[in-house]
Image (cartoon, rainbow, N blue to C red):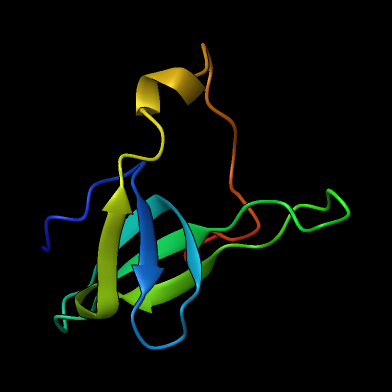
Length: 84
């Protein structure tokens, strides 16, 4: 799988969509993808993550360290979880 790590800020080369890599998926058929979570919009509303082929995503900067968002207890399924 591509070396795009969780927590980095990345951009889809095709659409220009940018966000933090919050998830990676690796499929049996060879389709590896990452979910990019964009910042809130101009009104402070949370935006949904979108999935992109990992080959079309480029690293921008360090983004956020996973330790900074680590919780004592993890939650259940997420609405943007591709297998939920």
